[in-house]
Amino acid sequence: MSRIVYVNGQYFPEEEASISIFDRGFLMADAVYEVTSVLDGKLLEFEGHLKRLKRSLSELNMPEPSVFNDLLEIHRKLVNDNQVEQGGVYLQVTRGVADRDFVYPKDVEPTLVIFTQSKDILGSPLVNSGMKVISIDDLRWGRRDIKTVQLLYPSMGKMMAKAADCDDAWMVEDGYVTEGTSNNAYIVVGNKIITRELSNDILHGITRASVLRYAKEAQMIVEERSFSVDEVKSADEAFITSASTFVMPVVEFDGVLIGTGKPGNVSKRLREIYIEESRNKAI
Ligand code: PMP
Image (cartoon, rainbow, N blue to C red; front, side):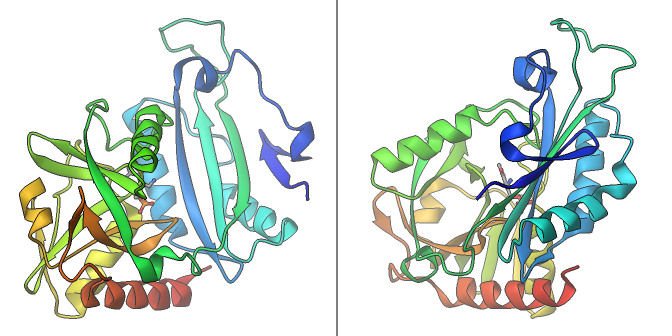
């Protein structure tokens, strides 16, 4: 079924939508994005995604699209028109269209593309089996806190994981895990939930912020610090968070079983809390 998508102020059937070959998103990866999950036909964490988008744009001196204040309405219309019950809304802003040059163009209207993707998030088989993860060197650039569309290395990482018959890769720098290819990474040791502290080294996950808040509210102990590859192998549990997976258990790392090799209780509990809370707050 053809979707209705949004491009620069207009709605099109997907096969009729297009952007210029001179778009800087295409030529230079000069673009940022957000993915907002949809559950029960409603948007999760919309405010958080909008805030992070604002920050990404500002860090790159990219102008905000003129319809910035209408983004909620556009998201809702797309979810509604495409009858998305579960899945996500992908939004991308590029610096716009200009003759190819490294220097940022002046007075150019940013390109804005928004489309929906239906996906069964709740029914993923990985919820019960847990994920198998490999470690890979983190070879990305130094501003991973900005959500840019430079996703080639994460894509290569997913392919390396697939080649190793695994589900994903955690990236490692100086012996310490930064994050997953498209998610934040956590271990559980005793009664502590450990995840890397916020910095330019990782994306400031919207799901991460909520999960840590819910964990603290449930009297769990949270430690925000870097953890090593060895710590993962001897951890009691591990999991990831992201808008497209919520909380997902990790049961194997570089061929070593984590804890019992089954999804752990802390991961399961956090997943339940996250789904319940975000469902209640969905708009
Ligand atoms: N880290 C990276 C590298 C990501 O790509 C993502 C998801 N886009 C995340 C973390 C998780 O962020 P969020 O919870 O906002 O989806």
